[in-house]
Image (cartoon, rainbow, N blue to C red; front, side, top):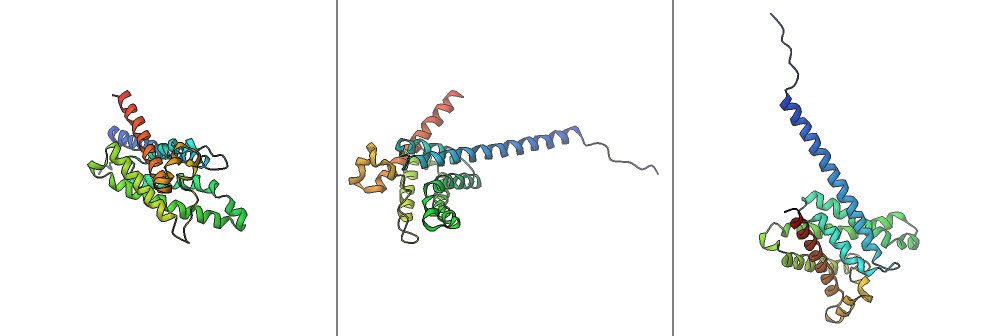
Length: 212
C-alpha cells in the first residue's frame, strides 16, 4: 500500500499562526509601553515632593498614571500600578537606607506602601464595572474619595502608620494648600486626585473626538 505523508500546512493555518504572533508581539509592546509610562509618572510624582518640590506635577503625573489603568484588565492594571508605586516610593524614601543602613528595609517599606496602591486599583477597577460609575464626575469622585480613604488608613497602619508620601504634602505651597483648614490632608488629597481624573478624561475625550 502507498504511504501518504501529511502535506504542508494550509495557507489559512499559516495566516492564523502569523496573526496570533502579531497580536502577541503587539500585546507585549503595549505592556512594555504602559510600564514605561507608569515609571515616568511615578518619577514625576516623586518630583512634586521636596527636595525638588515641583508641586504642579502632582496632577499631571497622576493623570498620566490613571490613563494607563483606565479600561485596563486587572493583571495589567496591577502591573502598571506596581511599577508606578515603586518608581515613586523608592526615590522618595531613599533616606531609609541612609538611616538604617539596610537596602532590604528600604525596598520592603517601598513595597508595603505600594501594596496600598494595589488595593486601591483593585477597588476602583471593580467600580468601573458599573455603568453609573463611568461618567467623568462620578469616576473622579470615586477615585478621589477611595484614594483619600486608603491614604488615611496608610497614615495609621501598619507600624503606627507612615505619613510620608501623601499627595497632599507637595501642595503646601500651592493654591490647594488653602483647603487644609477645611479637612486637612484628606481633603487636599481628594481634590488632587479628582483634578487628575478630570484631566485624564479631558484628554481622552479630545483624542476620541480627533479620531471620530
